Image (cartoon, rainbow, N blue to C red; front, top):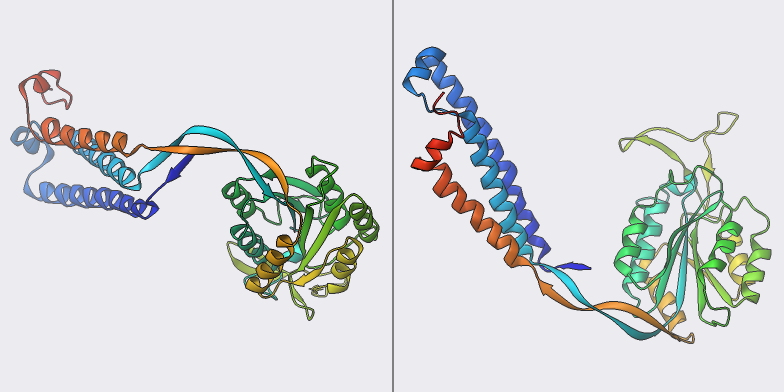
Length: 345
């Protein structure tokens, strides 16, 4: 496990392409100037020690030096001590709809991105709860098992898209069935499934499956994303809208938020439906619900001690700078004997 203390210093890496660009411009200017001054044969006699390789090597060494110094300023830390701690919390599984209808832009920036924002903000407001993630469309797919690693959860979340499942459609019942396998203790009373969807359900079994989940102690909360007025589904390439999805009759498909379906599913599993338009309101309501639930104690492993690693990168950075100063700038006797730059040819 590692941590990056001062990520802002990664911007210092931007000096490397500037160095490379300046080197290329200088080489081009030098080439043009030399061609005007004399031909290649004369230049070789006038400057026998000229070496393009030496200039390239100098740029590489300088780039490595700046890269090491920038990473040293970031100050990476590595976890050195792993310990088991007891925590209390709720097990929460997020089921995120990744069907094509989630590309509709009736809620900014689109339904899927809005769903990601909602889940991210909910996770940011959790304390010691465990989370898991499911992606579903025509079928459900386990994206991340139950974990206390919120950083990993948000990373997996951001990688979700409408192309990750080949089976299209929206089968909420498949997500509910899969969520049952996420909870490892049958006696838990704090099991929560949060479904984020536009409510377009192509399965008629979702409500019945939700009732079965409720009997097993799983509370289901649903969050609706989209607008009841609906919107078209854009078909894009490189971020540019080429067309809108059409049905078999050539008519533009309008997808709408189906709140009734989501309310029925939540009602069948002792949960509530929340409209997802206002992110802060959703987060507050979910927090209040979780605070009223019983907390179960569980063990979790976490790194308790992190050690600085900047000194390694600082050392390498200084080494490369010294290499540039003493070996590439000066023509030392022993280096000349090595003939690294073809100077004696």
